[in-house]
Image 1 (tube, helix red, strand yellow):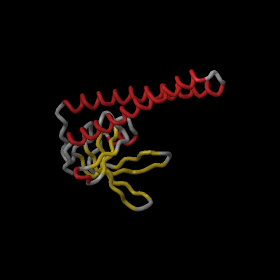
Image 2: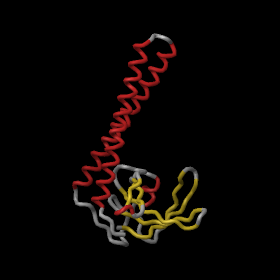
Image 3: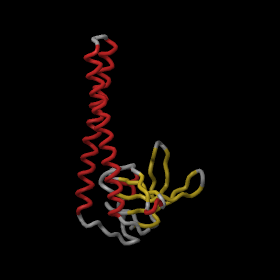
Image 4: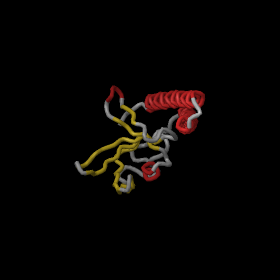
Length: 171
């Protein structure tokens, strides 16, 4: 597993920035819709819709704030020298972790990138080769994998289903 972590961090940063732009645009659209409904008529229905759009705008503003916090955490992490992990070393923040699990189709392998932000984001390997999932130390999979080494197996409950993950390699 030889992937450039800085390239992956940049890719994640771009995705978070794009989500931030979308959240700001959705907030502005919802606020404008709330204003236009409130001024067009004083009908109860329009008033209720204006309140709903206002709530939507508030939710999008909160989403944008969370994304800004994630971008700041990611930037701070990326400015330091990224940690190197021996193949048999324990999983920590900044590790790329290859795992296998068994599902209904047989064994499947997944690669995780343990970062302080961006949980759930799917990144693509160089040249579109393969996918990686970003996990954080506070996510169920992240909590289970921290400190584990190649060969260790952990159980993680996702969506009410217990799954076993075996660490294959840490980088």
